[in-house]
Image (cartoon, rainbow, N blue to C red; front, side, top):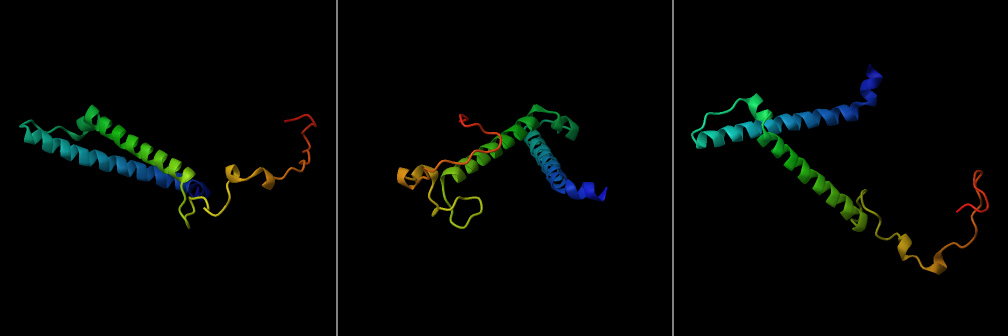
Length: 121
């Protein structure tokens, strides 16, 4: 049991944080929705009714959409931009493959591997 907890601790912590954030999102949304209901002279709704409502799930999906767009933008930015000293960034001083000239490439033939044939690509 101890090795299972150690081997899967990252997944368990991340899933726990996900659930904690989802519950926090639902509690805050429920309080906000009930305040909105009272402002319009409507009776407040129960928590279970709110969690199963389209208002809650639309809010969750909008939140996830913004997180995925943010992560996609970060991935694309790190693919093309530099940040000196960052572990996520490429080193700006290292020459890139597309920046090399033909004279700097190695033109010697490579040795064949065990499974490669002479006419292999």
